[in-house]
Length: 535
Image (cartoon, rainbow, N blue to C red; front, top):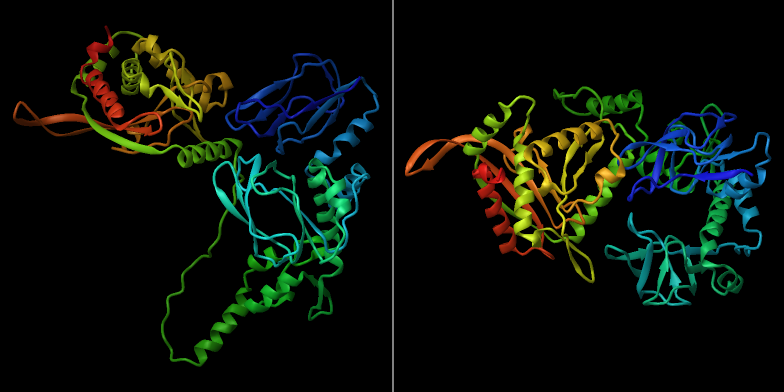
């Protein structure tokens, strides 16, 4: 019997994946344990193995394509087995289906759903943030029976990050409210219905389960897109050809003085859309002709004409970059950060490192010494080794320090479990090993999870001082700058010294200012007297 394999969740934060490479092709025999594909997650590129024996009957996501978790990835079964039922059951989830086929497939899947009357718009709970799964209607600013115009604020909706205004994109009358004030509903649940006054929408509000609302909207959207081609504005070019342009595109073109005959349409049947008008650049010939006319009517003035042209190159965001954006934005906008900076005399640390590295097959970096000092300081200041939740504060009984590592696509944080139990040389060896894996995208999810504190070091790039965003659910992160040779005062004398600035970013919900300052004092004592870390 054929088995459907969906896009797996290969990391705790993975929401979608990219098939980097298929290692088998359709028709190949597959055994349990065989590697099917290499999948790029938000953190690494990982091998995905089969848990079944059989023949690869179908590939649902081609190489280089991105798909959400749980979308159809492949089907494995017996050679020659009929999988049409499985394919038909999964067609709604495909992301690249042509619009005509998509409309047919979706409408077939929801044959029991009521038809949407002309002019009626079904509005669902919007996704107002990247992590929003459900929303609460804080306030309705319109009531049933009120006239609504495009741009009017319908309601204030509370998301997982903020309370935001939600405006209407349609004209009409508010015919139905599906979620009352104070109620919470998932994204895509039926929120409201707008349409001509007096329209009977009882079939929609009573016969549409909230989970099907998004599907109905998709049918409506596809039908409207197909219908829009028929209502496009038809124009004629100088050569007698016909131009199709949407009413909005025509209006914007008229406002900007753009001749539609010069614009290349990217919509269906070559239709000119709003995007085509906004990205249109007039031809150099006409632009220069216009300039000549202006110059002829004005005094001759020598002007500067810059060379080249303005433009942008679009690079698709990688899964890792998307994950970094989500996690750091979530941390910065939810955890109240504050920062504490101290300057450490690194003279003894430099001498100690030189002595240690003189031992054969031994290599310790200044970063290793910082990590070790942090681990020992955390043991003395457990309040910094905490995590905040809405109901409790969690004190970690273990110490696991994450070390930020720069990679081509962004940043990863491999973790050293039980860091306080490691020697300096063990920390150095483990950090080098994990950093190598990170740069080769070979880190496993287990090697990047479970940190209780983080160290970020930019000293090797000559950065003297900086601040970092906390790597939640940690309560703090230490930013390490470069060691700088400068005049310092020792025993009342000005001498040449070596100092290093470190900045501690703290979550004020868990770590008070005095606690963070005491942690830094202990950290400084260890770094300025490295022998204490060898005891």
